[in-house]
Amino acid sequence: MEQLSTAWPVLLTAGGILILALAAIFTVRFFRNRSRRSEMDDMEGHEFEYFCADLLRDNGFTEVEVTRGSGDYGVDILAEKDGITYAVQCKCHTDPIGIRAVQEVYAGRDYYDRMVGVVMTNQYFTSAAVHAAEKLKILLWDRGYVEAMMEEKE
Image 1 (cartoon, rainbow, N blue to C red):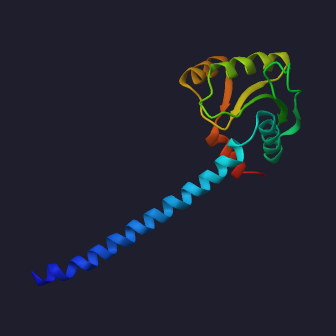
Image 2: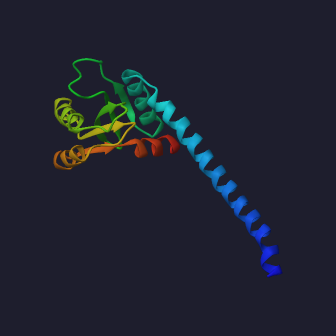
Image 3: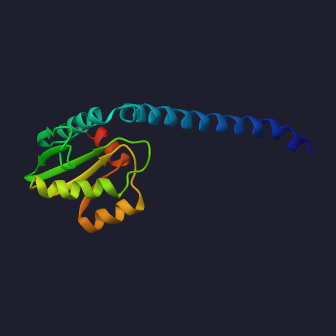
């Protein structure tokens, strides 16, 4: 019985250290992700378009051009990489991106005579948008993909 009573303080100390370590890890991850979020999420639409254009350049895209604001036929950025031409629709929102963005870039891809259509966002996509993108052969670059691009800058 005495051994058990002397083991409790050691177990409580070890458990406390483990809890503090886990709390520190989660705190670091929270603030790291929060700083990433604020970089993208605090931007206005046109500012986000230029952010995405710079990100594409940093990741090896060439001939990156931000289209004019209105009357852009659903395409915000024109770019090229490895001989493949892209039409990119940028969406900076607080909610998941729906099917409309997919439809817009689908039309814009053909209007600008581009090989690939992309919707690039700081969020994620609704299931309807994912389904439509599969059918229309549109690439969806969600928050995770954009964050990976931010980390992989050439």
